[in-house]
Amino acid sequence: MLINCPFCGPRDLREFSIRGADVALDRPEGTEWSEAWQDYLHLRENPAGVSQELWQHTGGCGAWLVVTRDTRTHEIISVRSAREAAT
Ligand SMILES: [Zn+2]
Image 1 (spheres, helix red, strand yellow):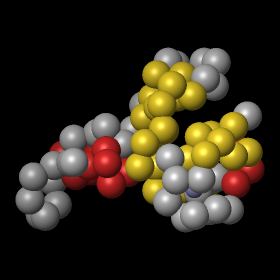
Image 2 (cartoon, protein in one colour):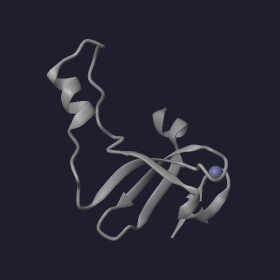
Image 3 (tube, rainbow, N blue to C red):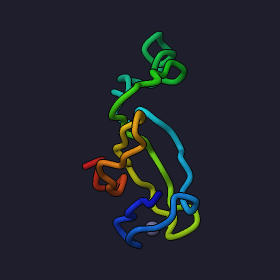
Image 4 (tube, protein in one colour):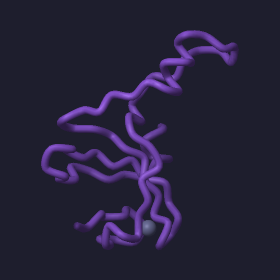
């Protein structure tokens, strides 16, 4: 399987490391501990379908990437830099 790094081009999956799922979660307001923070940090869905994940090109340029992937088929729908995704 290939991941198309926006900076390096298509590279083998083994060059990448997954760093987290559900990157589309809404971060709670404030910094004080709350039930919302508890849920944000510890509760994750395991969706069967399209999911946004945070990956890093650890065997290449080191870029942080948001990968949109279908967990049922492993099809990669899009890859964009995390910086671009945050704007
Ligand atoms: Zn790269």
